[in-house]
Every structure is written in C-alpha cells, then in structure tokens.
Length: 545
Image (tube, rainbow, N blue to C red; front, side, top):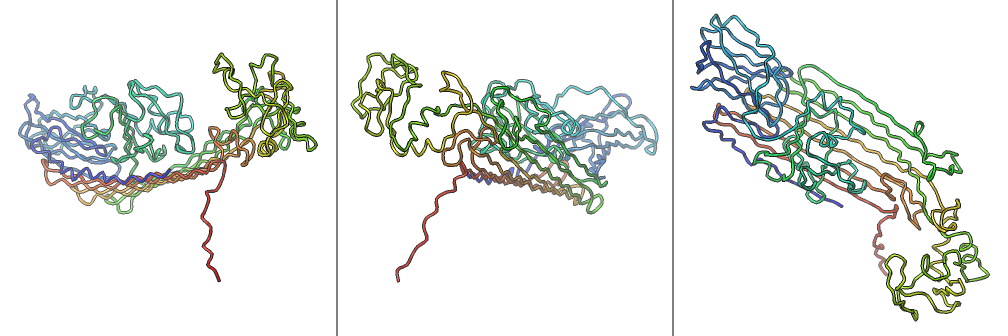
C-alpha cells in the first residue's frame, strides 16, 4: 500500500489576527503562552508595565507591556522553561523563574509589585497552581522528564494514550506489515480509534485510510505530549474522539546529548510446554531465537549562540521474533498411501467415523452428490458427501475408506512435512509443532533547526524518517505457505518508509497582530510481498530479425 499525503497544513496563513485579545492570545499546536495580570500593593492593576519573558535554554527574549487593564499575553513561545521579569517605575522589579510552557496551553503568572527602586529585584518562589480558567479542554500533559523516564514497554510512544482516563485498548490491530511503527488501537471515551487525531509539531501525523499514527516519535526527540480527550479547540476539527499532539526538541545554547541501549532475549524466557516441547533439530533449542535490541542517541546545541540551534537523534531496533506453532498435517498413513508411487489410492480411514458425521470429507457439488436431509454447519452434514466409487481422480468412497487424489494434490502433499507428535483425535489433529524466527529491523532519525531571527520572528524546520524491514519464513516454505514466523505470524517480506516534514514561521507585528504560517508533508509507503513471492514482471520485448 502506498499512501501519499501532502497536506500543506498551511494553517492557512492563519493571520492569527488576535485583535483586542491581549489576555487570551493562544499559540496553536506548536506554541504555548504565558498570560497574567500585574497589580500594585493595593491590588489595582498597573498598565504599561514591562514584562520580559526569557527562554532559559536559548536566551531568546520577548518584551511586552501590560494593557490598560494590567493584563499581558506572551504568545508563540516554543515549549520549554522561561523566566518572567516585571518592571515598572516606582516599584521593585519582580522575577518568576522556571515557568514551564507547554504547546497549546497557557501558563498563568500574575505579579503584585512592591514599592521601591526598579534596580531592586524580588524573586517570586513557588505558588499554589491556579485553576485552569483560560480554556475548557480536558487533557493530560506529559513533560520531557515523564516521556523519557516512564517505564513504557518497547519504548512505544503511542502507549502514552493508555495512561489517559477514558481509554481502552482494542483486542486487535492492523497487521505488522502495514503498521510496523506499532501504533496501538484504542477507544477514547467509547469512540472508534480512527477518530483520534495525531499531530507532530503542529502538522498532521495520521494516515487517513488506516486511521493510525504514521511517525511514532522516538522518546529521545520528544519534549512533551498532550492528549486531549474532550473540548479540543476548533482548529483540530479533523479529530472526533481525541487528539494527541507532540513536540520535538530544539537545541539550546549548551551542547547536550544522550545515549541509550536496551536489550531483551530468549535466554531468560520460559518455554511453552505444548508448542515448544520439541527441540529444534539443528540448534537444539526449545525456544526460537528472540531478541529485542533498542539503541540510539541524540545531540543538540547552538550553531550561532542565542540565534540558531540544531537538534538531531537516531534510534535503531534490531529484533528477532521467535514463534512456535502447533497445527495439523496429514497423518503417516495418509502420506504412505497417497504418496506411494505404486498406488494412487489414499487411505483416509483415520479421518472417518462409522456414521459419516465428524471428520467426514465433503465435496462442493459436481460428482453425483447425495444430499442429506439434515443440515449442520458444524459437522458439514447436509453438504455433498463423496459417494462415487474409488478409481477416479479426485473422488472418495467413505464406505471403503479410500480416496483418489489428483496430481496437484499429491504435489502439494509432498510440500507438507510429516507429523512429529502424537496429536489429538487419534493423531489426526494438532500433530505437528515447529518454531522459527523472523527479522524486524528499523532505523529512525530526526533533524530539527530553530532560528530566532529577532525577538519578533522565529523560524523552525524538522525532518523525520523511519524505515522498517520485516521478514518471516512460512511454516511450510514459500511454495506451501502456512503460519509465518515473523512478527504477529507474518510470512513474507515487508519494507516501509515513513517520512514527515514540518516547518513554520511566526512573526509578531505588535502585541495585537500575529502571523503563523506552517507547512507539513507526510509520506507513508508500505511494500508487502506475502510469502516472499516477488511480483510478476512483463517479459522483455523481442524484435524479429
């Protein structure tokens, strides 16, 4: 399947004309805000007070003034920590440090001046958090520390949805060949999984056909996650059940990086006494090779101090998925009679019972059928029972407990192995066990740049790509097929390449007029060859003479 989604999420020159709304000028998806009210010692508001908002990592500053009502709003702030300083003539300066800003949220920081000189500074320490009064959405926020340190099995970003009230996981999911990124399927407040929207850096991150996340962000690249389950803003109207927005990290003035490695294998696993009771004849192991190896790292820092920053990360996965299966194959009696070159008669007596009900063989309907009076979908009684005498290819005689197989059936039987266990139902069922291992590798990387051209102009761009290679040998080989030993029982090969681009420019003309332009590109490309069969190609053109 190949889906190209070019959504120029040009939040359509969202000339965020927020005229006359200095108190509630929110950022969209990518940005956050700091809002508040400045008052004097008697509680009266202070218009014209200077508010300086400083990004602690990049040292970029935003300067604004309070309006006639003493309110201020610092918008279009990239997620991170900020110091907020308040100044006004005749009052001591006040400073609130390490205010955390999330995307699509507003942090409220109020200030009450004390009489004194502006050269004096009062540092405001911890305060009781205010009730959220600026918006009505119901959301769960995960900080960079939580994203990095919560024990998420397989380090799958989409698992964070399960930590949100009102969510429940489905009992099924898309095949691993179409969903190698491991996007989980869940209901959100009873709504179908396809109604949950996904955004990465403010651009779409959802396949419109499968309804799942396309780029599953690496945990090293994620600075925050917001999962909204009710009352999300109108700009996210494409989502009907919930919204998952995530932001990637940007660089800072300090060079920083990380490295990680996680590994699990079959060495410490317990074996299944039913499907893993027979040791592999070559390796001698009861449990097939099983490996989950996750490694990578990140690095970020300045290109031009206080102006231009970069961030990049890489994550690799090397997986060997071991599977064991218990199934049914033709018995030794069937093989010895059907594959005997001296006779074309197959003895199926082990599969028949005296009354011709259970384990009987039925014919779809062109060889002189005898239709029973009673129809049973369970045993097949009422379908067309073979009654024609033996000696003609493709027919059976239940009375004589014999059948004649056509040549293609004999060829197929040659591809199926003999039983290797006693099985059930007199050895006719669950008489074969086998194990095997499939490969599942992926490589993912992200590159991001941020440019603080001026205090009013900010530009960012991010490119993400992840490639998956999934393979699994079938139980009976490529010719006969059967259960696959790849991830989730997959048999064949699957190659996937997912790509995502996000870029945006925001410019503040003044405190009342802002622009925000954002463009996104999403590419979801899956190429599946079931059983490893290569697609047919047309013959070369041969010219006469």
